[in-house]
Length: 624
Image (cartoon, rainbow, N blue to C red; front, top):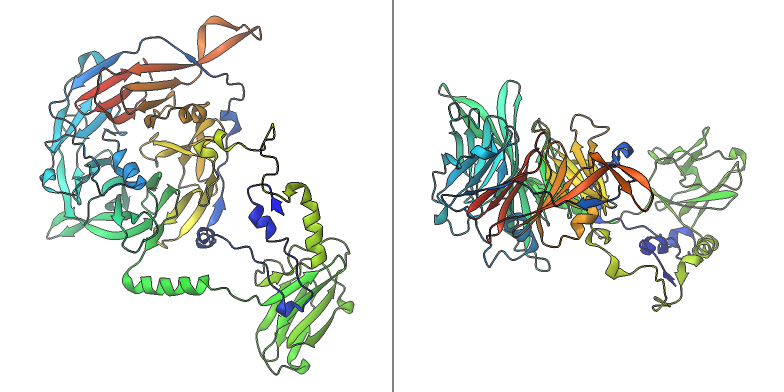
């Protein structure tokens, strides 16, 4: 018998017939949870609540607009410090982490400020106030080390922790913490190194935050690495490492310096789509396809491995139970040489207590429903205690024997299995795909998009507590494909955008709201569907005011999708004969450059596009 449907394997586990042997010898059917679920069982399973008021069920699509877009091009004095993948960086994780890296960095604390690192090791800045009076990018900082001397270097990375603090990686494994003053103002801006240390193998900075606790200033950063896994013989041979580093201000010899206060490492088997530290530095959030977990020191690691082995071993249930519409039967295995005088059974109101003399109870708790106390009996049979309980209300089946007690195992008898199988018969067939040439097959795999495919390890959003190093909240994203991230408010965590049906929904993490930790703040109509058709897309972005979303391809072309805006003229829908009040526009810009696009950032008014030798500005909105 073959079950049609995605979760047939789970349904089959409850259709296996039970034998007529005593419960002590029955085969107990257990649903085997994935290891990932077991690791997260202590975390709160959450969901993302869509704000229906931000959805537009009447959205009609984007209208291609031929209106010209003002585009300005600035030539670079020195080319961007692009680092191409080496021959030993051949996995998808290497491509996602380093091959698709965004070399253009937007300073969200100061409007229309972008930065990049050139081949001379200079951090270059372009600050825009007026498009018609653009100045060439200026040098604000120069990396002290020679980046080209490192054979296994990665691309240099920058992250703006606050309005006055910046973290920089030179791509060789060295981390810089820099105090900048007010950026974008040449008179007050001065980049001063406050921390400079080699932290092992090369990395890129995924995120960083600046915070103050107990009048002590700290900066925390997430360092991303893809490293060789010598023990992984069947997989890609690599693992992904996220190092959470906290640098804290300390007084030493009447001088205030910064030292590493704490280093914690998470490991996983896929590059995270999204990784960010909460503003207070207490926790972090990760969106990833494969799970991450904290690594401990060697001594604790051994203990963790032993605990993991014990947890993985199957524990025998404390009791087995069966039921009919009228009664229940509970079976408990007993130690050798136990007599009826050693057994103590009580039925307090709505509960049950089973214990051996002078020992803690084997079974204790509140029963799921009421029973007939006077009709309950028990007997010792084959070294097992068998308790017969009569239901007070005949008919309803109990989902559990004792409320919130998972130590027992429910066993179906053959008649119950047959009844369930009969109810599911309309979902089954005796053959695999009995009608392959059917006119309307239930599913055509060729019509599935990437985000529609069911994954064994589906993407999840996890929140890790920095003190306990454990997962506190989990959201199973399922088929809600991750699209991109954007900074709406630099004081908050970056937002992330997910596909929901054909739309793209923007979510803002709210770490100070435990009951509603992710807020739906904007919707880009049909963007989920549109982006799926752009096979050559490289970067996706949106501005802080959500007025548009933009995609760029690897070469030249940029697609802009504006939110619906009211029309200044009257427009009618000819098919329906009604007036159209607003329209959403699609615009296309083609860059006059043959070099590949290396960076892409969006502000409320402009798009910044970085190629190897040029920086382009595209005027999208005339005003905020």
